[in-house]
Each structure stands twice: as C-alpha cells, then as structure tokens.
Image 1 (cartoon, rainbow, N blue to C red):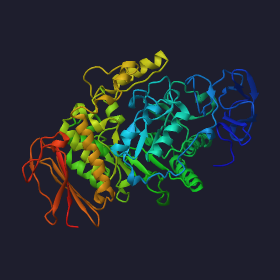
Image 2 (cartoon, rainbow, N blue to C red; image 1 turned 60 degrees about the vertical axis):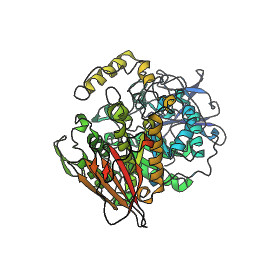
Image 3 (cartoon, rainbow, N blue to C red; image 1 turned 120 degrees about the vertical axis):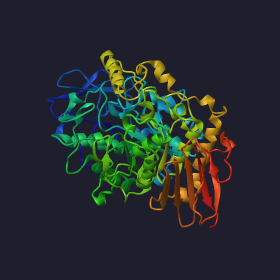
Image 4 (tube, rainbow, N blue to C red; image 1 turned 90 degrees about the horizontal axis):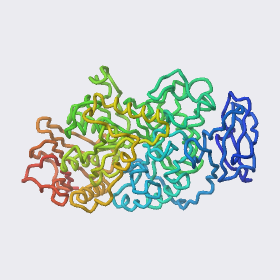
Length: 602
C-alpha cells in the first residue's frame, strides 16, 4: 500500500520487531513484553504508535498499554495462545517452511469446492485432522477446499463468525503454523485453499477494538450493532486494517482464494468501495509475486456491480455464492415454502437460475414486496458458485438437518446431479458426498454467562416463524458440538459407499465431458414440463452436446430428447451400482432421478 507501518508486530531483516498499533486518541502507549518489560512507543502519523526493538522476539508474549490503562491484546495479533482475553504472541511468518514453489492456483473454471469446518471435519478437530483426510478429498475429485473462518474466537467451539482477532489463527485448530502446514500439504495434493473471512463485523467476546480507536461508526446499524467504519472519520486506517489482512493471507499463508462473508452487510458509501480497493491491492500483489488469487463473496443483493470487473466500473470480485439456485433446487425437491424459501416456486425458477443465475433479476419479489435484483447476462458461469447444501442452510435449521434427513436417497442423488451439471462452479458441504446423517448444529463456547444466555434466546427467537417445532439444541453445550462431527466410520456401509461412488462419478464426468467442464452460460437451453416436474438441460460446445433429464416427480416420466443427435447414457442415478432401483423401461426416466446423455456423432 504505502509507507505507513504495518499493524501489529513484524520482523525485519535484522530480526528486530517492528511494532505498530493504531490508537489515534491515546496520549501515550507502551508494549508490555512477557509481563515484565514496558517499552514506550512513539507517536507516528495517522494515529499510529510505533517502535523498532530487539527486545521482542518470536515466541514472546506481549500486550499494549494505552494511557496507563489495563493492558490489552494486539488487535492485529497473529497468535492468541491463551484465547481472546490473553496476551498476544509474536510470530515471524518468514519461519514457515514451504514446499509449494511449483504450485499454480487453478482457474476458477476448474474449482470443485468442498466446504468444511475444521472443528467438526475430523475427530481431531484440527488442521492436522484435515491433512489426514486429503487423500479422501483427492480421490473424490475435489480441487479446492473452503475452510470456515479461523480467526481467533472464544473457546474452542464456534462456527468462526464470532472471531475477534482478524489476523490470528485459532489456537485450538493449530494456530498459524498449523494452517501454513495444511495449505502446503493441500498444494502438494493439487488442492487449492479458500479461506472464509469476516469483514462485516467482529464477534462480541474479546472485542477490544473500541478501546483502541474508531473501528465502528454509528452512521449505520447492522445485526451486530454499529457498523465497521469504512466511510466515516478515521476510516482510512480501518480500511487499511482489512486490506492488509487480505494481503497477509495471500502473501504469508499462500491462501489461494478468500470467501468474504456477507458483503451486503458492509456499509460503505465511499467514492471507492472497500471491495474495489481490496481488489486493486490484490491485483498489485499478484503482479509482484506472479501468484494468482481469487476473491469470492457471499452476497444476496443480486447486483452484478459487485462481480463486474473494475474496467466496467464494478468492484471486481471474481465470483459469488448464489443462494437462489439453492433455494429453487430445494423447493423443487420438496422443501417447505417457509422462511427464505417462501419466495420460491420450484422447477420453473430452477430452470431460470440455470439460464440467468439470479432468479430475481429485476422482477417483483412477493417475499420482499418489491422489485428486486438486476440481470447478470454478461457475467460468465465461473462467477457463480452453486450448491444443494452449505453450512448456513444446514446449520441455520433449528435441528441442523442435512439433506440426508430431509430427502429420499434417490432425491439426494438427483440434487447432487443438478448441481454438477450446472454451468456454474459446484460446491459440496462436508459429508454430503456420503449422505452424512449427523446434523450440523450451531455451537459456541463463550465464557461470559450473559452472552451465552443472549445467544440461546437469539436462536430461539430466530425460529419463531421458521422450523418452529420443538426446542433448539443448546449452542453452548459440548454435546451440540460433538453431535455435529462427521462419522468417517460409516463410509464403507451400504448406502453411504454407493452415494460416495456416485459423487465420484459425477465429478469425474464433469471433468471429462467438455460440454460440462466448459462454463459457457450462452450454450445452454432448458425445457420445463411443470406438470410432470421434469427439466431437460442441454449444454454444448463445438465438439460435444449433453442432455440432462431431471425428474423431480414421484412417478416415472417419458424421455423426450432432441432428435437431431444420437444419444448415449453417460450416467443414470437410478442404476443399481448407486443403490438405485435400476433404469426404467425404454423411453422412461425413473422418479427422483437424473440421466445424463452425451452425443456420439462427433
């Protein structure tokens, strides 16, 4: 960026600590090293306090003391070994050992994403636990894992969206070194790493930012209180705090892509939106290092401005999650039309999402009582990420039910196929590939009793009109967390192993068939029979065509394929090898199944 000091503690070529903390209102500042030495900091420009010293070394604990008040951890700490209330620990990221010099981040077109939560993915609940399962992911055909947030949060049980140290890697997962080792191991397996980051709020416990400076503004209200200060007085340094965090993940941790949580909750009316400024800085980093990085957003405003390139006056984000495909698919499969599903009618809107990405793209939304969205006709397929389930839509059900608990075995296979044949980037949620039956529940491990009770009440209120039957599991209970762990021991059992085999076949087919692998939204056609609940999806390249016939009804339906080509079945989800009932009679497609046809006359 510029010559301002980097927030936190960094080590120079003389192995001295370069210390900087932003505290514009402080009259004096000091750093406390190992609870003993107190070293005064010097006031610098733009509200920073700085010091270069050899008295703070990697492994040392430290805190900042402002105006002789209670010492506090560093807001840009790289390590919190004693949790969110403890001292920070200095780390030299140059000490990480890398073996990935030959690694090249794949283009987004080649991403097949696997979202996972570190604490529940393995019995260990650590980065090392993920590393031990990379062979499974490689054999499945995954090309990128997406790790739910790892910024330090209270205790050891949390989804990660309560993080309060944006730069520090969760100590119970393995800390900064553990994350670096995981990334290196993934690259050795040919797997990219996406890290989920939260730039729209900080968690409530251990949030000391207000003690340092105006990180928040009262100009806007968010679900978490005052908004982060991206456009009010002193916002330059708040913006810089997050921009430097993005660059750190890419530069120091070799992360391949970031998934930015709920960017619609970022309040910024600056002439240059914070996302655009992030993109410009990432572009500059890539030009400097020669490494490719992607910026992916979670976003529900259906506005292509966010993913349009900067050259078209957009914010330049590379891709976005698209919940509307998920909602339309789930309602088509039989999901109750309540909560955020109430605005979706099923198969016609699923076809619209295949064609247009956004369902609501400038049309009236009954749920919102207004016209909503804009068309994304010029945005390629690799800018949209689709899924049949993810952490939000599983975990934000009161009982955390996965698809395996809500839909038949055959419908689960159909939904998997519907995602894999789309002209978009597919994403799986951990365990989906074998129809995991354990739920993914909402869990926390706060240490403040009043906060714990507030979380409990909040969860109960959330389900007042959505999944309202029964009682929500206690988010604070250890059992809630343990119940959410994957059951790796069931993979070889009947049903689970056939589902896993089907997922492997679908992913392999997507990679092998050019008409599926090429994410061209223009070469696509859908034909819907709403009465029969069937959808025919056609995709093609210059050398190949495919037809995907999806039957979401409970009855066999006739097959009506284009007659100008000779068609061969590439995959039928009803086959007995996938634990299905077997193909229907000639000219028919089984209920709740998908048949993928490829042409043979090229």
